[in-house]
Image 1: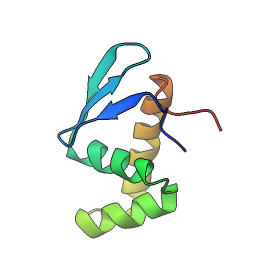
Image 2 (image 1 turned 30 degrees about the vertical axis):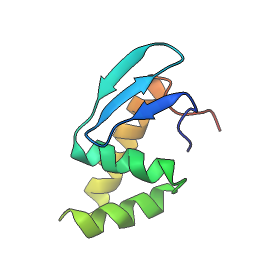
Image 3 (image 1 turned 90 degrees about the vertical axis):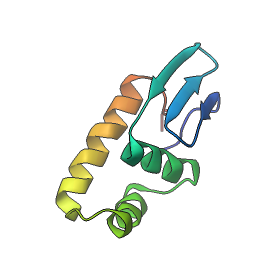
Image 4 (image 1 turned 135 degrees about the horizontal axis):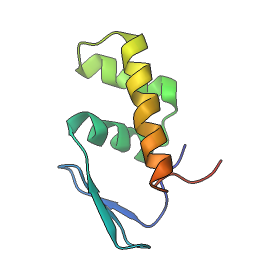
Length: 81
């Protein structure tokens, strides 16, 4: 999973796709997931990292991460693998 190259992301969750001019916002957890994607983390690493920050079980967290990644893919913000 890699974010597209033409993506600018602020610390407060504002996302700008310079290729299309589209912008999006995300919450704190989404910003943390994006931060992990910028570090080329895999899904297991993202789950571990977020479990250290938030009090949530791994199964719920994995489901939410899958949904968020699906949204990013739908919005064409992730590169095809």
